[in-house]
Image (tube, rainbow, N blue to C red):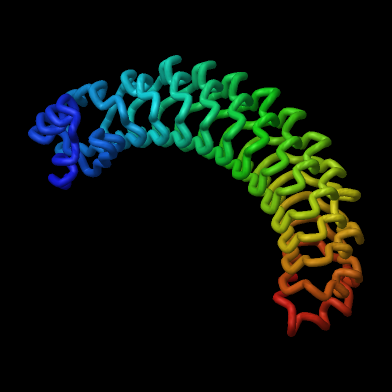
Length: 346
């Protein structure tokens, strides 16, 4: 801790608290910020693994930034809920299993990081965090989200990978400000019908879930550029995928797809398409209408033929078709001729 920062503290109670805290045998302040004579930011670290109880922070009523990560906290410090100016809160890698309902009082909170805590649910008041822009709860124990979650009207980034979510609230699609969504490795079996309503969503990661289908309006997310749906149980795709004019990368590998007719061809910006490790018996010729495609992956399917038009895709730089039961004449000569210039795996 920089002693110069202490001298900038004009509030007597805050200064006395910081001087007492600095003598602690259990904790130390790794970072501090002072504005207008008040402590507005603080990061605390442990001095030793076996430590006592964290001193109350209630005196520091002007805090805007708090980092209490990796302190083995078993309970959420409830005095934090009284910090009306708080904008950023880090509580990663603790042992917190429950959030108090009062967390909804943090109306100015913009960033919340709860990664690696055994939290199984969020209180209904969580939806009151109207200013929240980034929420991370990776590798927790979340089984569901409150119905109020769709009220987070300013949420831009949501990271919920490695939890136990089986479903999402019906109003999840009301998160209209959402730009990044990561729900990797959960237990989702379906998505709500409102899912296709995100006007600003650019990146979707739903890898390693148990999804069997997608809502019909999935293609309504016109801003999306990256979609990862690999390692699911998808058996079919909605035709609305053709409406994704700005998507650049789609990964649908390791699913149970047998037919993709009518779902591709209209993605004018698509560069990478991975449909490997499915059950496809046919590549529809509409794939050849992808204007910017550079990388096609169809390995590990049940293909017997490759359409001749694949060889005519001028933008194609890389393609993979290995581990398919092709007929003797199933690979066009025109495609074989492109092998010297094309990274082709057959």
